[in-house]
Length: 169
Image (cartoon, rainbow, N blue to C red; front, top):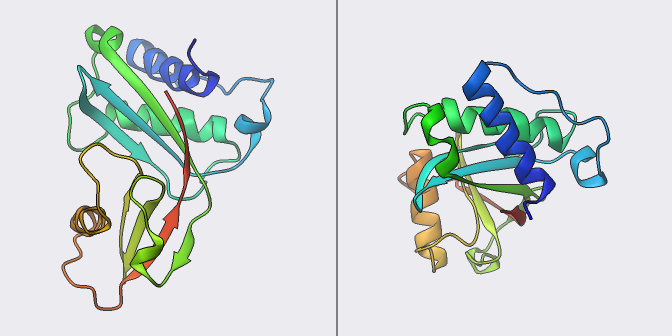
């Protein structure tokens, strides 16, 4: 059975792709949907990434609103992909990560790519990589990818944050 958070992401995308309208959050919010947190929505099609957009920290009043907004943006505005079309909807697999508040760290040994996601910050540049991603097995690889995503090419004045996620599929 699909978790309610994943069902909300799916419903938001399907409604938006079919009608161009954003759904309203459910009225009867469970504690996890009523909370405030950063949320990433990932879409896969035949095992390949099809969209992934999220927020480091909450930008909406509830996780439900955050899921709806980020799901639609992941489907329609991820710059790496064309917008999801109606004929693809049956093939899309959904994953929703609800992030813990970021925790600043000073030692890379406080990271573990299976347990913690990482945020890198240097000046105005920021990058994030979720934890427990296929092919990301070392701290060094996790940091390399995250810095590349942020356009950061040096460790000078680099700030590191870690976070955990609750992953729903």
